[in-house]
Image (cartoon, rainbow over all chains, first blue to last red; front, side, top):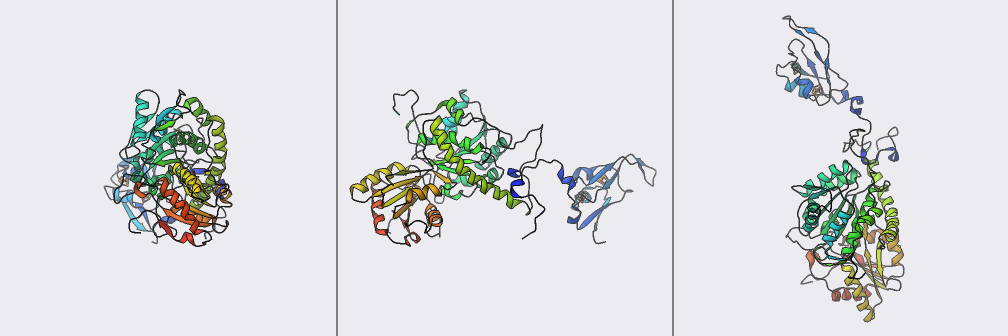
Length: 108
Length: 397
Ligand code: SF4
Ligand code: SF4
């Protein structure tokens, strides 16, 4: 049987399994679920925000961090990953129209 | 009760259920037709159309949706109701577990009916027996009056903060659902006195948000299920108190089981639902023929009133359990007989006889029940009688 000594006892849990503490998923470390991690090429990224929209885990961060690419084009935002939240589903890589995201095996 | 009383109505159990829904001021009703339940929700729609009940009616496209809609309504804090039968109950089986797991105090009437195939729109208890482990409190009523009273009482039990379980009020399709008899509605004032509207359960509220219906991991699931076990134990205690409260407010109560001439009985027949009247007549007839018979009726089926049953059966040497459903391949094959064999076991000095009868509303007369009661004498002292089920009335047996 799994050792669950740190988990609450039956009478300490809310009936009906309601969750009273909102946004608690942000505190769950999902990094160990991952087989592959998304890696973004900031040069290719056109800041379209699709990965931010599609990520089911809120693991794509939109940062107020200007970026100037090699052609001198300036963007006001930069997208990065929060690898603590990313579970490696690959949706962002699938949705990115310019193929700026590559899924790389965790082992590498 | 006299018909001269202004309050007395002549109605079917279905109409009595609708009347109770009106009197406890239900907020949301999911409506879907299935024989023989349909006239319950038709009557409720009529009450709403006439302004007698201020409720939101949701015309759903299936029983699965009916229960799902009620789960949503109850999660928002509404007092919710629906009614079903047979395949409809089975179709909502998946969602029944969600209602009880979410601890939502829904109330549903079940006009019991046989299951397909072959298709039968007539009565037996196969539908109810198939959902007995869905975590709902289950009452089985035997008259229109009892259907009314129990539906009113059900809200108080369901919404008790120490219980918070959904409740089914079952009764026999057609035999009760479509047979008119006199009954006396308590009226809204008394119904709400017995079952006042209290928002005792966790519900969705934009000002104080929570999440409901989540996924759990293996570390948590079992504890939530154990909470339901404890809630059922609490429900048994509260159901006993509820009978006293009903007596006080409605002037009527039934007990968790009812007995007839059981005190000095050698043999007894146990039935549920509308066989109760005939069983009592059969007891009188069996006694005239020299068998000291008695009868019992299970009114509360979940949680199982074992203590009441044991107390009533002291001194009885043969108990015949009449099941109107089959647990295929089980020994005994009657679900209630099986349960009594398991729970009472050797604790009482009793031979148990499992009888399956009345499937698909095959007529079981007073004469049949009398014959069954008298025949119980043969099983006196037979310790393994329960391993064989008597499929009463099957041609060729
Ligand atoms: S791999 Fe999945 S979880 Fe990770 S950032 Fe992309 S979409 Fe989000
Ligand atoms: S979808 Fe691709 S291009 Fe668009 S913001 Fe994300 S990484 Fe950049």
